[in-house]
Amino acid sequence: MNVFKTALVALVAILPSACANLERSRDTANPNVSGQVLAQQVCSNCHGVTGNSRSPEFPNLAAQREAYLVAQLSGFKAHTREDPPGTEYMWGLSHNLTDKQIKEVAAYFSTQKLLPEPLEGKPERIEAGRAIFKDGIPDKAVPGCGSCHGPQGLGNAGDGPRIAGQHSHYLIKQLAVFQKTNQRPEGAAMKVVAHNLSAENMKNVAAFVQAMPNL
Image (cartoon, rainbow, N blue to C red; front, side, top):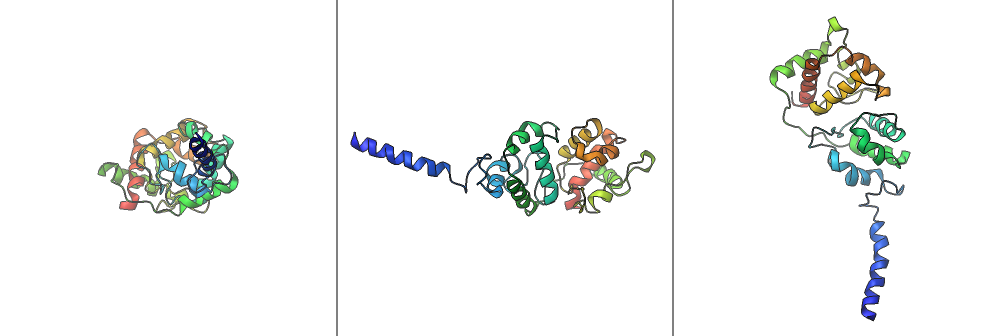
């Protein structure tokens, strides 16, 4: 009995330190856990450890602009970004994050390398999308994507995020959000751009953008 009690006391003494392992913690409510650890232990479940998402449902975060990631995480935390299904996960996950953790998560993913992926669109769609990305659709007053996202789709110092190499399925979903809803109020410029895009236009430009790193 004494041996059992001794073992139990030892176990109780160990548990707090194990739960407080800041290098492997998934506790988004603990401000002492670094953003890098949360990125690797929590965000990785959907976005991959290095920000290369295996599912087209979740965006690639690798090599995304740090300032853009900070803005999006802050938007989820403040509930100003409302597009589903992101809100189903991101509102809760970001609720307790500190500004420091948000910056650390963003810094971590922004420095990761975006890995090459198989093309998700057909060649004819990619070529049609190339024209939209470069020149826009003049007769619909749609500007070329490069004016905000850069000629290589890498983003710019303003509000334009990196889109090159992003999953086409995710891009199409977000274009539809901009076109049909007010769930992303910070993207007012994109709402105007997306207003006159047809479903085919969206599929084409998304196919080209996803393929950009491989072209």
